[in-house]
Amino acid sequence: MPIITEIEDLKRLYKRRVPKMFYDYAETGSWTEQTFRENSSDFDEIRLRQRVAVDMAGRSTATRMVGQDCKMPVALAPVGLCGMQSADGEIKAARAAEKFGVPFTLSTMSICSIEDVASHTSKPFWFQVYTLKDDDFMKRLFARAKDAKCSALVITVDLQVLGQRHKDLKNGLSAPPKLTPSSILNLATKVPWGLEMLQTRRRFFGNIVGHAKGVTDPSSLSSWTAEAFDPSLDWNRIREFRSWWDGPVILKGILDAEDARRALDVGADAIVVSNHGGRQLDGALSSIRMLPKIMDAVGDKIEVHLDSGIRSGQDVLKALALGARGTMIGRAFVYGLGAMGEAGVTRALEVIHKELDVTMALCGERSVAGLGRHNLLLPADFADRWS
Ligand SMILES: Cc1cc2nc3c(=O)[nH]c(=O)nc-3n(C[C@H](O)[C@H](O)[C@H](O)COP(=O)(O)O)c2cc1C
Image (cartoon, rainbow, N blue to C red):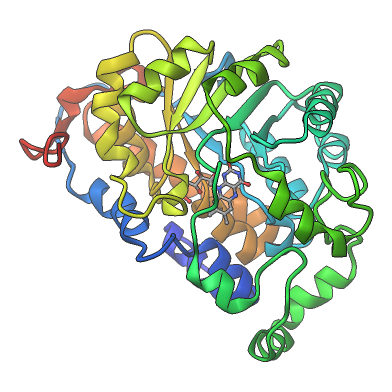
């Protein structure tokens, strides 16, 4: 096994193993990718305060997120098409998360279905829904998630309209994919990936094909996806979705203090401060830069989580020290999944856990609950540079 000491190592292996169209699908932001880049580079603006001679024996990264005990405050974010990064990818990622002791979130746009993931895992996972028009389909999706014993519903509210990602259009990544001559050539070079794919029957959107009206086979998917998203989404509709689920609801994709207050109003139990990993509104500020204002607005009333740009345990620590209760990682686990399947997701979690644990200790903290603004050194205008 190659020596993997940081998430970047997994990314290098991932790039070698997976077809370019799927690597590009993950490793891209919308338009100029400014927000995608700043999601990570803004973490670098935050520095840590070193403390010494604090007893570090018996320290712990354990916490609770949305009522669930976790080994560390990191959940796997919902990521569409994981089953194309590695055969049966969602099952592999869910198993790795379960064994490690962190929540896994299954995307609506997964390759493995809810039922499939539930039958290959033994602990409840979280299920993510997009805000689609078709009430019948949505209600059945909620019921399927309930039957599969999903422990929380994540409603993604920042994809009412799709942000443009140039690489996906150029690579012909659509549902189903329209293969270009260069993507066919590239696919031919990814032999281990291809052999693995040939051995699975799970190659299409498992939550949709055979479940959405008129989508009986993969060829009818593209017209369905073009129609399915609801541009008229408003807070009343989100309130309605909330009322269909009697367990915890997490609203994902909040990037503004005013929207955080609205999320509270509609009865969310938690929010994820997120810009969809820079894949939606290019030009939006990074999640970490928006976090302090959102904490000021709702931090004492609702669980606040954060994603977008996290590539290390140090990044996790910075988000926690600014007040987040938990975090989600997207690409950091996808790199692991594409590189080495389930073992790669486990490795990504181990890397982040070790970084978080050691950084916490070097900051003089024994538990994640003790982390706070006192651990950080921030530029004076970090949260107010743009107004
Ligand atoms: C390849 C890819 C697919 C994604 N698919 C979904 C999805 O189906 N549903 C969703 O709510 N978010 C989706 N996201 C956004 C992630 O849940 C998460 O917000 C984002 O990846 C966090 O940023 P990070 O990748 O920098 O950690 C996707 C992100 C990526 C990279």
